[in-house]
Image 1 (cartoon, rainbow, N blue to C red):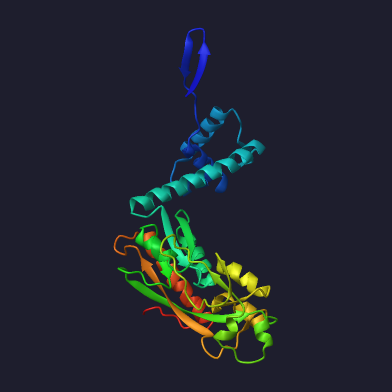
Image 2 (image 1 turned 60 degrees about the vertical axis):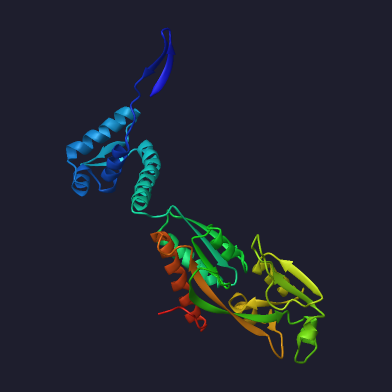
Length: 320
């Protein structure tokens, strides 16, 4: 509707509007090269399409099609308008798809907490695969550390959690054993000792650790007896500092495969404790009440970590 002010006050007048169906029929005529072929393709009569397009031109006051022999083609104005209209058509189709999925019980959003020790390649592959299947479902990814993921589970803030920490009262599915390797830059003083190291050697140097992301009841994990310690918020920050020779740390092997291969980082020659393993599991907040998107995300994560582990010859813990 449009409102105008006249001598008689404010009046409402009818304003003609082009419908989405008219744009769809115009697009069909253009895509199929004429009214007859378009009519056959979308199961409408040629006269219906002809009327819809002419009505559209009348409403817009612009010619959108022009005859070329026995066929028609878009005018310059028609090309511009149809290009914009196709966005409306695609958005409408997407909206209908979302509505149908919601009606079938599909979630609008999936919240996932994934511990930073989980293989990054598997995480990226799983999210890409999930997005290809459910492009309209929003994903909230929380990159947690230690108790951060399980805390979200207890608070009901995550649909799925991948963690190396057991969650009391929840059953998890084993995914993979993540190997942590004690490493430092090749030029670090610990490597210059030229002998097997013990924990007393480490105590004299700076250790890099990643902070527990839990808001409550955060804990420390691993060996933390170095006289100097820098605590950071993300594994990638710790890795950057290691490359710069600013300390030593236990880092997930999958995160440093390239650095180990290139010699940027070197395992510390510890007599014991240089390698430790953490079993990582996938946990549903409520498996029975989880929607199809949450189950699809879980399946994508399990499949991706299995593929990544097979490529790198890492034993996974996925149950058959």
